[in-house]
Length: 137
Ligand code: FES
Ligand code: FES
Image 1 (cartoon, rainbow, N blue to C red):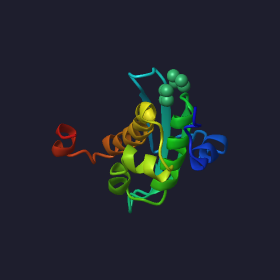
Image 2: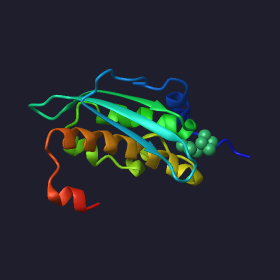
Image 3: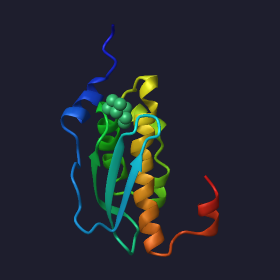
């Protein structure tokens, strides 16, 4: 059987970036995957003027693919505005990692949902959620 993980996935799994917790974060998200029951937590610190993500950390209770995806999306999201970070998709994250096995798609979806939940938490706390955003995908 061919080993299913790219070098980059292994690198991010073995040396995940931005692992941990931010004490008193500006936004936090905790999401669980219905597919496997695993969870991911994402913490954000956001510049209130520019809405740029200045710090981001995550804790994963999931598998290698989830850890690697969460790691790469923290790198992709750091320095981006909330709007930009919201548009990071699991497909982009997976491409950035050099691919993941198809059966592991839900693990990258879970990581992206954790990031989006943290962004939503920040927006809700700061009155930034518009009607449109709450009703659309
Ligand atoms: Fe979640 Fe394997 S089922 S790590
Ligand atoms: Fe659960 Fe990957 S199997 S996050």
